[in-house]
Length: 334
Image (cartoon, rainbow, N blue to C red; front, side, top):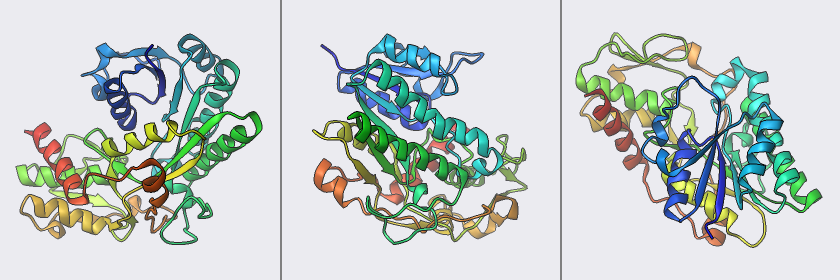
């Protein structure tokens, strides 16, 4: 019999790559989607005919429980969240409801309807916040620096409490920043690589807007926040394999997943614009509106446990990732 997987957040970046991965593994894959006015989902449109989709909402515990009861999954992957740290300052209560309490509702539904299912909780490197040590591993103390990180830490702690209290198989992947062509344009990696593609094609004012409702590229310039912020960036397609591997272990546990390399946003800009033969300093401006009230990091993963126990390591380099993103924007814009 086919293994059954249930994915929340299936239309997002991670959910779509994970769905692809599990289908190739021979799983029967069901995704939870919110009720919307249309049924076209860009990230999963190419595999939609192979998926089962169920309407439910992380704000509604009854709908989640009904979804779990209907599927009776072997594995549950909770990937749904309000996933913009910067946006979490604008919508802190909504972020807490979806990213924190929403995860709790999914765990509760699984405890009630399918307690033997293996459960993956998408935790985040943002939980390390104002970092206590560099690099960060599974033993590094958490110190969240934004509402998103605080909500993720709530879900992470509930996962550990349910694991111990109810003997549930709940594992957490503490994933560092991971990007892809399926990432929303609100993320800095996408803004930068989109701007590089626009510059290459001579687009001085873009059709796509930033979080302030203005063109991402305006008069040939892209506005960014703190250029010295450091992140550990990897490719989402590599990281979903770690999610699956985490649930194939005999015992539930937590794993840090990242590349072990750190890059500034300035170096991201340099890599993206130099790829299209341009000087990034002519196209990038700092706008105080995009500087977070508090800055995280520097975040850099010590993923030695994942390497040793899971046999996992990243396959895509920083340079390859940036070029992949620029190429994807060039193809779309052309």
